[in-house]
Image 1: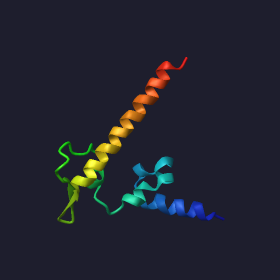
Image 2: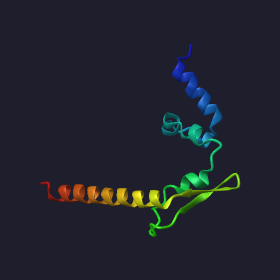
Image 3: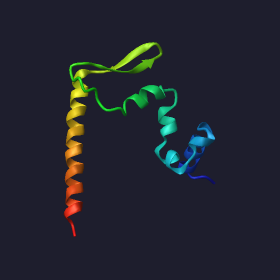
Image 4: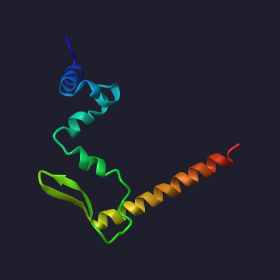
Amino acid sequence: MKRPFESTQTDHVAVAGTSETTPWLQHTRWAELFRNRSLEIIAATVKQPALQLSRNYLLGRWQGFPLWSSAETEAQLQIILHGLDLMFDRARATLDRTP
């Protein structure tokens, strides 16, 4: 008798292709999350924010319609990334000084 988690996981594996059935992908269910969505647009969201903060950023097209990231969102992402850079620089400096 299968437990509910096993049957759900088995259903997910059946839906995903054989290249998408690693334990990590099964656990995260990314194949299910991204199914029927534009991977081109999803991939575009991992790019660094636009350097020109006054411009919108075209992520791509979905079903013929352009999808944009607003200039405001791009500016917010720049601030977040700057904060992350500072955090990692500080962590690295701490490690370098730690005996």
